[in-house]
Image (cartoon, rainbow over all chains, first blue to last red; front, side, top):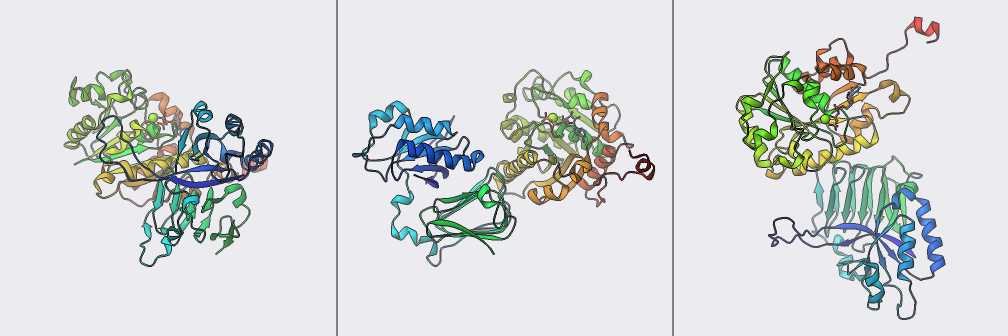
Length: 245
Length: 269
Ligand SMILES: Nc1ncnc2c1ncn2[C@@H]1O[C@H](COP(=O)(O)OP(=O)(O)OP(=O)(O)O)[C@@H](O)[C@H]1O
Ligand SMILES: [Mg+2]
């Protein structure tokens, strides 16, 4: 089992909606994806407890998408309701199932959860997408002011450069690298469309969460190394590393 | 043309109304024609702190609904020349305010006043957004604790994205940080954030630090804005803040805990 922190949904605002009391907005959101690499009910319960116990605050009320795309559902019997109740016991809020050819739609119906097909998840990336942030001439997105709590900035197809701090409760995402000339107190997610080479740099590390291509660390784990120092984050052997700058 | 200043915070109970009353009074004391508007529809607090609750006849919502005109509704302060209060309705709810209505009232006030102070309700939703929408400047009231600082940060984000100035791409709302209920002794004990901590996180210019003071409670109970009490540190600190708002450079006071006198130390107090 692995838990990913991913950018899962994205499209442009639909300007044609002219409805008066609401509008449908496309947006970039981040969520946990609970991706099963194997399924065993007891093992799942045990491992989820371990993960959540490691940073209980962080997972409270987090929406989560359940993803069986790595499993052969024709061979494995899944108790959907049992998974949902285990998640809820640990404070996670299952919101949807990731699309899978062999999902048991009858069983799913009873759960009242949606089935979604993320536009660009790491499992569907194409090799050409991977190199996009590096292609010469791609203009980095530059933000000249602090990113405040509650704000979200996404650099699509490029690097993101922030001249200022990223506040606690703010979130910055990029398909490429993220450079923060200031304090990182919120969340930074680089390489969100499946770029393992992406890195995050900041001049002061007090991050809530950093993630590169879905591999993430939360502040409990971050506070030990490079805390309140200039830092960079990068992936090596499928693990997220941090070092001083 | 009046300057429109919103007093806002996100978090509730941090001292917005106390500040609106003190700063509004301070501006009027310096000869500026000033009106303080209570945007906290449904709660109505400003008139109590200004000591004019018994003279409320009409309110902001009556004006918006054309049930009364501004002249009938504005309450003239008894102590200070040039100072007026536009009270909120106690009986209506927040939905009584509309952007068009508020704009019309602000435009009319703008013709005769120098400053319009908008006392925002708590939160970051519609009521707070209504109060800040037309602002030229914002006084962000913050207490030296993590949750208050976080909410101030959110309000700063909203000022930069949802105000009229932001939407029209004109010059951004000018931001001022006002730290209130500051208790230097508790800061020194590490129980509260320091001025430097808060400045570092919010990264906007500091316009004042108001110490935690019993004079504030006394002033609200008497309906007399604390800035009138120039014997109290809080009153002096608000005067300094008004001077800074008007562009003067004033040294900061009351940032450290008073040292124990030699006598007190001898007695071991
Ligand atoms: N400097 C201070 N020292 C001591 N008490 C203070 C100080 N400033 C404000 N208070 C007290 O804090 C309380 C809340 O103040 P106030 O009503 O001004 O806050 P507010 O932000 O307007 O609240 P609301 O969000 O409910 O509108 C009051 O009891 C007030 O007396
Ligand atoms: Mg108030």
